[in-house]
Image (cartoon, rainbow, N blue to C red):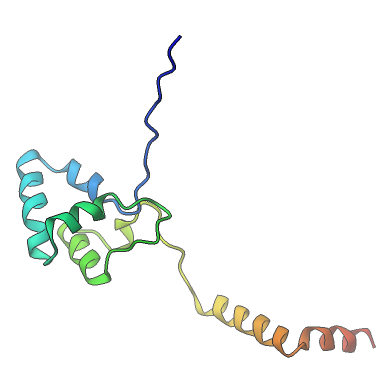
Amino acid sequence: MLKIKQKQHQTYKYRILELLNKLPHNEYLIAKNRLPIAINVSPTTFHDWKYIKEGSGRRIPAEDLYQIASFFDLSVKEMFTTPPKGINYEQLKKDYYETTAGSFNLKNKENASSKS
């Protein structure tokens, strides 16, 4: 019995390929050929961006991603297959105080004073 290798589904970081494939054929051809020119990148670079895998450290520059998102009438956040984790002030403040307290050994002093 032959075992057939199944091609594993690749998850890409950006939805460019998915969105292009949803376009009608004539719009797809125009977008595929003219979008790289409009955002001033080589066709090879644009092609490579479509296949950046989830978890890869490779990134599309912010201005270029914005322009691509604009073409599809989407937000930059909507261009990601899995949107990156956001950052807020409260989390930064918590991390800052935990790091600062640890570096000055304040956590141990606080625990000692609360026991008295």
